[in-house]
Length: 245
Image (cartoon, rainbow, N blue to C red; front, side, top):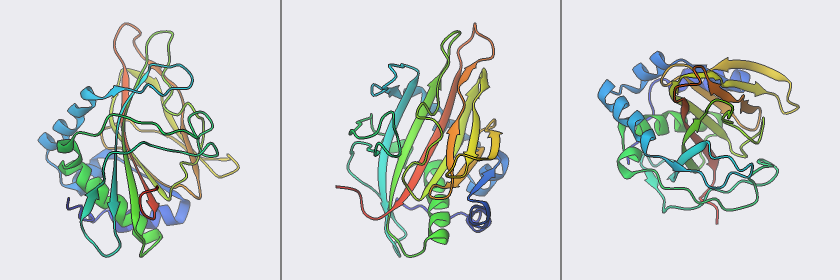
């Protein structure tokens, strides 16, 4: 896979370096990635094919997801998709779901190779390398859908405000349908609030230096209880080093 670094990366890197996080609105992101409307539509349509997350410690059935992992080596332009593996977080970083291997359905190959994913892999790599040069990167990709119903809210981050235990986190909104709530919170390590915003439009994107800030998202509920509602996001994370294990 070829994941070139888009020209957005330097300015985004400076913003993250200055504050520990940055917010980029969808129109600017779409223009910077250079993807066509058809490519973005096809990418967004893949969220209809996510599978139920069966690892919810709170017993919830409101989250659907797929997962993939990649390697990006210092000085090598190519991004390599690694064999499918479980997602693992320590209890320190995820007090609800940490400490166990969680297997999720793999991201479809055509989706992983699509122009939007390759553009975002390149963008995140550019920011990660600007912040911490000359490192190999282990990258994880998560497609999430959070569903909400009348009387049954959805929880984008049931573990609360948290670190992911990585170097860099990129969160891109794909769709927000018939929802209220879903505010993204960014805090310092002591959980003092630094920013609060809503990702509303396709490709509204938050990028976070995970060592410097925590993040979380408030629960979502349907704006019209009689209609379906969901929040679709792509999360990419970069952690220096080879794949674990």
